[in-house]
Length: 256
Ligand code: PGA
Image (tube, rainbow, N blue to C red; front, top):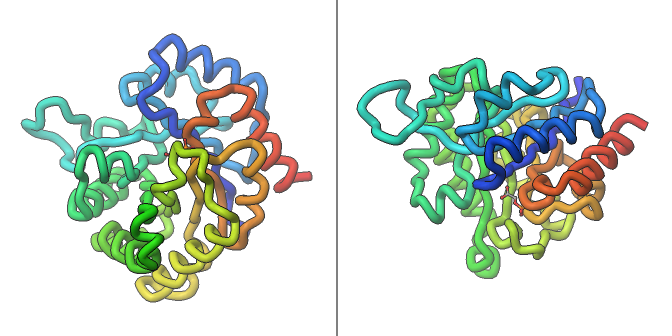
């Protein structure tokens, strides 16, 4: 069975409640409902509940950008993924901004991946090398470490619930987007490592997306890369026209 395509909009720390709601409303009138493309919106956590009431769940899925891995307790200021059950279907884990700005370790990340799965929410595990690591020829090592680190608690029954996002750190928010050949190589490394960990069938079935300065002009080229099942879009997902174009182009490529 063909894997569904994923287009994930990471709004990061942008849009207040009103802006999020208006944006969602406008977007919902501009794009269709697709059987084989999941459009996943990842807004600020405080907007999630109200957007989940507004959203047509056949048209959009929702994702948390972050959460704490314990299910309840004395953790002032945190939101547990168990509190997001029924609101989100996906959750980003290990985004490079979480790793680098908020010092999330592989230990935190693997606990979050496991917590998402335990709560029936699909984790989107983000991995990627910095420009220094790439220049030192360490890309494969870094991707392997982050995969092994992030997936350490995931059983072979659960592994296909995980989405892997390849996001080279140097390409995020920089406009310095990766070449499709670089993406192809990295995705091949990822699937090879998944094969070592979980076998051939999982390596073939697991969904892998690319993220890093995706624009309407580059979206189709990335989707054409063998092994790429979708896109994680940051900056361009905050612009209605650009995001609409990305979705239309992928729909044209996949369905027409
Ligand atoms: P960008 O962000 O598209 O703005 O590079 C992608 C991401 O951080 O997920």
